[in-house]
Image (tube, rainbow, N blue to C red; front, side, top):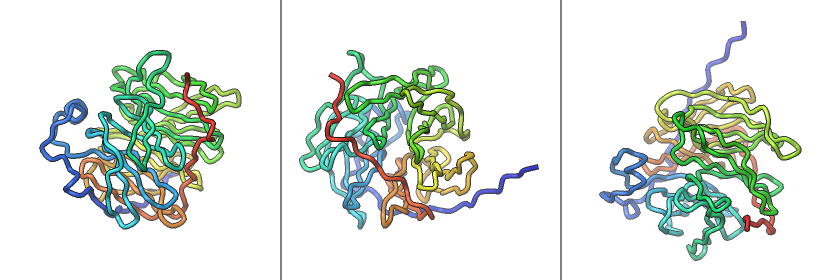
Amino acid sequence: MFLLQPPTVRDTEVFTRMPDRFRRTGVRSGWADANRGGQPTDSFLEGPVFDETGHLYVSDIPFGRIFRIDPQGEWALVAEWAGEPNGLKFLNAHELLVTDYRNGLMACDIRSGAVRPYLERRNSERFRGVNDLVFDSRGNLYFTDQGQTGLHDPTGRLYRLRPDGRLDLLLGNVPSPNGVALSPDERVLYLAVTRGNAVWRVPLMDDGSVAKVSLFFTSYGPSGPDGLAVDQKGRLIVANPGLGVAWVLNHRAEPELVLRSAAGASLTNLAFGGPERRTLFCTESVSGSILRAELDSPGLPIHRPPAALQPPA
């Protein structure tokens, strides 16, 4: 009989915490009323991504903010608007593409803080609530439309926006699509299905379709997989709020390593950074902390689209 080896368990460490001057203590938000049962929420961090100079950008969903954190852990406010920003990826050297739950896809200029609509609707229909995004090496953008879907309403969506502006609906039956990541060869997309407590494996076919979508990993607990990342070994790293861990899974979805949160249980998203991109940085959303842990393999490169990328007309 083949027996799985128990995974190694390690603690993360706190890299930095949101300074008190940025915390909205005592401020009620509609987002927290809907998503945290009205609990006091002075911030809720998400969407970590690094620029080429080693600065980390994160979003603050309930208060519509994006922050920049320097390599020493110092914070600066980049932008603030009437939105609920979540996932972040660089559109070019000076603009972030943002999945804004309230407004759709938005572009944020990190120099001025100006924000402009990028893709607000599909065929004149508003999105349910976009969540996370990833570019492949050819400039295709994959993003999730989660809204309030779940097992009661498995109608969340996965989209692909091609560089020529064509928008494809790849999946429309997902109970809470969240984080997205690509395998090293870009033939498989991993999709976090938060309220299904799972990660789906989505094969990307040569003709642009998807087929034989399957359940890759099953978790447990009060909140399922959220943000995803992949390292150069092809291992999938899964942020699991509720449990306060990040799973490091091999190609068979066996946990090789479990990283435990050093501050709170709401470990929501992941990004590789630091020297040779071997450090995994994690957002711990409720405490407003950035955690980190050294891994033995670098993260995959984060792609940007070609300059010609166009949103649908």
